Length: 335
Image (cartoon, rainbow, N blue to C red; front, top):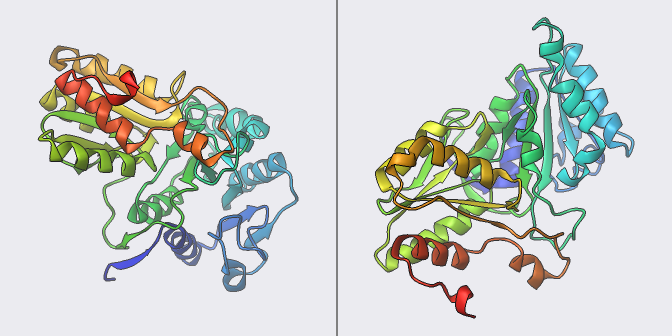
């Protein structure tokens, strides 16, 4: 297949359709995934192609959706359960964290839970505090759950296809601000293997580690920095469990400086875990402490302007990187 230009949303739909054609055990279940086509249109028209027995509209009960998916996976199916917002994870953490994540261990490896939980996170639609969070740290904190957060169109397709071949539960978090983003999809050429990070931009002066939509803010910041002679290496993690420490470590040991950028809040978030791992692995190579740029520790505001201000921007990333490398005072520190 030749590469095509498509959207993040359509790449996900293609991944689901191809997986369902390849494996009749793949089923989709969730609120409005069938006739309506999904809250964000990812499952649009799949019910026409595969029928209501494989694209299943469920009651409005998140615990029932995930509980049914766990049981279906244990019984031989490969369900894709859609949780409309990652914010609703609190209602399903028993089914997800206490059941799906632990069943292979509790059963001594005799049975697993080969399911994918697709969900949406992040800001950008003025959906306010209960529908805009980045809760990936909850998932990564639970042993037994695999976690993927694709940023590119190609990764949206390939990471989802691979997730649907794994023997254990995968939490697949899509940023709601990426669905309409266009990019190149090549079904024959994944960006990298599952669990491996990708260097999206090479550089020599510092390493910036990020994932999901913050990749594009970071790349924009790197362009700004390059104009002033500072070359930042940008690493897209793609998967949070498994996490590719090798790529991060190799980059930081070469550049001597590291930043971590996440949309999730700073306190107790992935930014802390990533910074700690870099510090532990690269202590003798670091010229400065690892710097974190993350979301504000506040509920997400509904106001578009306040919402934008609650998460990192390309300007904030660039100014913080400049401070890290050149020890200049950024504009936000003197405003």
